[in-house]
Image 1 (cartoon, rainbow, N blue to C red):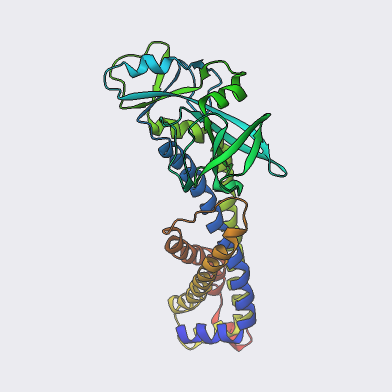
Image 2 (cartoon, rainbow, N blue to C red; image 1 turned 30 degrees about the vertical axis):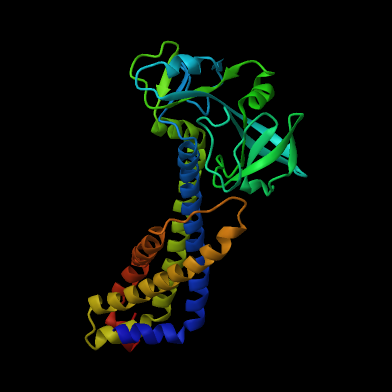
Length: 348
């Protein structure tokens, strides 16, 4: 029966090709959805790792270092630095702002002591050494020596950092602590968090301690609804793919009712008939999944932020696509089983 199934696909090759193209577009979108979700998770982990802290301290009761709205005195870093287990402690300012290059762009801003914790690895240039300097995310397209204005302050780009975006690819600027304090607090000696090298061994009155994992969770919390929406869209895309495959198999069964009746009349079993249609569904799904890999690879660079499709997503797509193809063909298979041999001889 597998030869019959392949000959049927050859006879209806135009329909098969159209179905593969349509299904591959849907599968390609599921890969891109997986890439979106992966990128959002990786952004949070990368920016937290880039700041080089072992622990984060924020105002007691604050939800976390990235979403807190409660500043603390920057001098708290000196108190924390004297605690057991702490080799170094530095204040950190985190805020959101905009720059004009030439159009208005949203940016994340991190202010830290020059040479202290909160300084990222560089892709070019040097680190911030004093006020008036900035390390810019390569996503902004700036070069060392360029100048930009942030909330009325003129800053010179002295270094570049790569892969330090968060919140859907929003680029990050790294400033001297006093510049960030001027932008966020009008120059008052405040901070949003204290970073530590080493983990404080004692209590921290008035402060709440967060691990790196908790800092990542705090950063990702505002993205929960967005990630849920991505998962929902992915599920709907799988349903669309199942509908395309199921309709193709069902139409094939309807067009071959008399042929199926003849096969049954000469002794073909239901199992062999079902196997033939299952082969068609699996071939369609597998071909569409393979083509979807190419489509997703081509489309990923078009999106405005990095789409990181995990390597495991590709074999997982092929395997899942074949299972979806089999599940989607159930309606057509049931119709094939219901065909009566009498139809081959002109019966009802």
